[in-house]
Image (cartoon, rainbow, N blue to C red; front, top):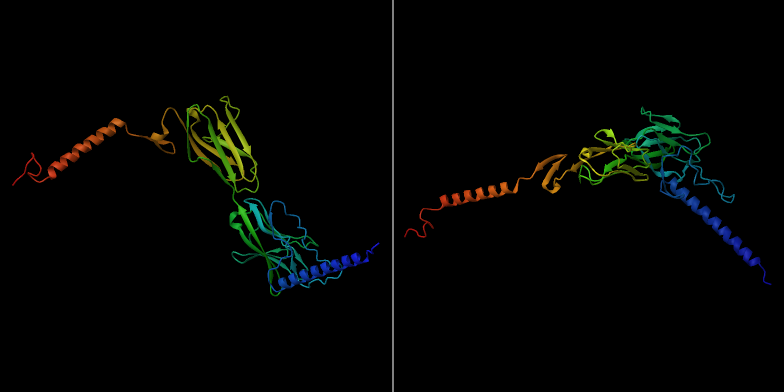
Length: 329
């Protein structure tokens, strides 16, 4: 029976080679960071700022690899930190920065657009009280919190460590302003007795609106009114939709309709219920209609213009030219 010793030896050698390669790769990437050359200790992540108040779990484990790895003696950024963060206007935004081996160095947050120092350590260096740093004892995560985020807060923020030269990690913040739009706005024409179907789309919203109200001429649409035939459906998601349907349209249904979501500015549309009019023969501007001239009036105008043209030709001709079938010799 063949011995299993060669196979066992081969497995041990392969394991040692893999450990050696891991150590070499880690040390090479550490040296690149020390020289300021971009290196990757993992993957760049994107994140939503809706629930990151808890420190992020480090992607790196800077403990000994198989008990024999010498740790770098300088601060190292952990790329478990999301490099792209999104937030919705009015909500708080959280930007994370994980630093290993910080030692006696300090962590600062800098706003790139105006090179404004926001925080140093646990202290805030701005008069804007919306900014603060969150850091718990023993944690490697230094979290920049921006209360009531606005679109103007979008941009790059640098997490800097006070080494020489300074090391930094950039996080991009994108603050979304949700947008509501009614399909077919600003005007919609429907025939009397048909169905009014209005669809409101709410886009660019990291979170669905808590509610969507419909108004008609400034009054909340009553879905249970004696009129009947009024229904509303809502689809919530990354792009939310609300549809208002009014059956058996009547002239009193004419007017301004408003879609009012909870998380953005309202959208408007003006509905015209036609009572026998022909929309193709109307030029409408927010409900002001200009009727087309009658056909008989147009024919009379053309006839008068033709008579006037003949008169001009008769008077412009030279005397004796093509008159009475002859001319001067």
